[in-house]
Image 1 (tube, protein in one colour):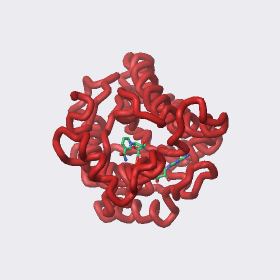
Image 2 (cartoon, protein in one colour):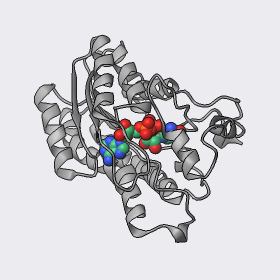
Image 3 (cartoon, protein in one colour):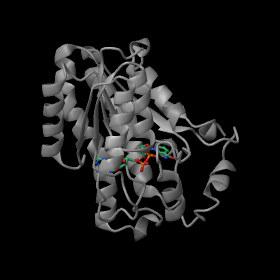
Image 4 (cartoon, protein in one colour):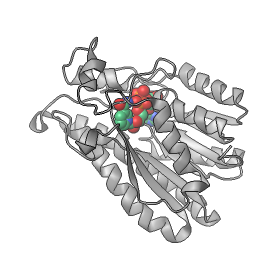
Length: 274
Ligand SMILES: NC(=O)c1ccc[n+]([C@@H]2O[C@H](COP(=O)([O-])OP(=O)(O)OC[C@H]3O[C@@H](n4cnc5c(N)ncnc54)[C@H](O)[C@@H]3O)[C@@H](O)[C@H]2O)c1
């Protein structure tokens, strides 16, 4: 129970890595604020998390004994972000942990010069600016309480390039930069900011993740055999499990990681060590 007495806010919590983090955090004793757009987004060519999926994540966490506030939030909406954080502070004593997990993998699949202005702006707005907005809203409370842990879900795409994926790669590299700069801003206030860079995460049906298959689709890889294709680049010959990412997030969230800030940690089975 390494997170007993802590309240964690997780964006993109309806499914996938967000759900895996939520359930792990609940097992570790945290109370949870679960946020997700819970609707599809024009311009993203695949379904995003739904309200039913968000409610299911909440139910799984409650079964573990967590108090849960679940609400729809589009991280592109500054007023919505402020309102969600206000509602969280109203319900709980304060926010101890923020996991910036909400993200989209498409629109992708084009070379740099083929990307239109709206597609570029959409990717940056969700995958980079969304995390900035959440930190902006949560940080004042953390600074006041002189305690807090922010975890940004970047990617191996935040460390290396991928063909025909430049907006995502740029957003995830941006998230690494935001992590390092924010770590310096808040270090004197004992608020820690770290990034996790997962490799290819298996779309585990238990958490209803579907990003890997969508990455495959946007890169014109066959959806049916996509896991085998991503496996070829994995030194461990295993895709990354959402629970492994959640385990790393739980550790960064907890007090055992009290001297970790500005760190950019891979959970990639050695992918970026090649
Ligand atoms: N799956 C992978 O292989 C992988 C690898 C590295 C990093 N990541 C990152 O991990 C995070 C989670 O990915 P996942 O695999 O669980 O994907 P997923 O698509 O299964 O889940 C993402 C969740 O974010 C939500 N979301 C999307 N846009 C939103 C918005 N504007 N506001 C609020 N919520 C929004 C979706 O509704 C969805 O529930 C993402 O940031 C992703 O870029 C994933």
